[in-house]
Image (cartoon, rainbow, N blue to C red; front, side, top):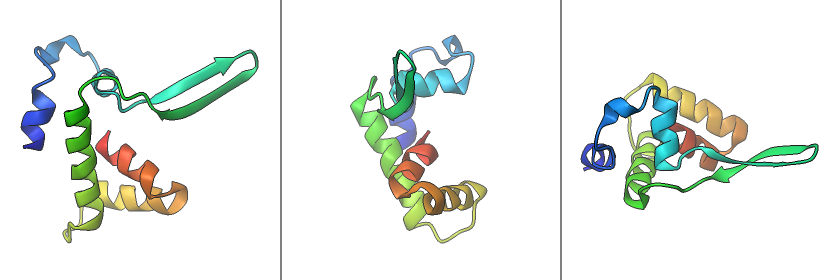
Length: 95
């Protein structure tokens, strides 16, 4: 279900030159706030398909909490969760 949900918003995936462009299209990139000398990242932008974002978020949560097998993505996500918090790690794994 997740794979179908991710593939459906992209009519033609070849129009994205990088995976970071596709992630931005789905709304999983941090918002940027810049004013004068202030520059900071905020929460995710939430542009794009809500259902696709939900499926990726749930898949990342399942990978980090329920999956018993070892994977490098899970190890990286758990290391990030320890350093930055579980919410940020979930979004990073979903990305």
